[in-house]
Length: 102
Image (cartoon, rainbow, N blue to C red):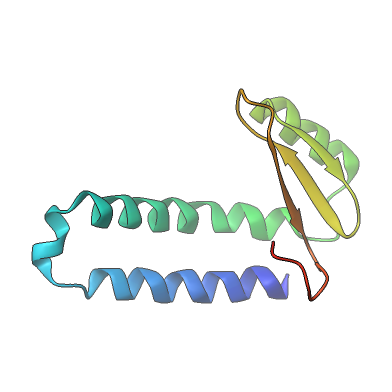
């Protein structure tokens, strides 16, 4: 849960920095993409906070997989998610090793 809160603080900071950029940049596609990605991430943060709680049971994960059409391997220390048509997964650990690039 602490990592989610740290992410929220970091992304909120990015959002403020993005909004403080010169108005002339708002016409750039890169600015619009960045702004949209930040906004989307801020929208899903409450869900991440809820899903990181210890009270989440396997039945909750099954429901999330059913609704999203995704497959997860749920483990106490890591979460592996297969996303999209390509079947390529993304791996996100709750407590990755210090040498991890994730």
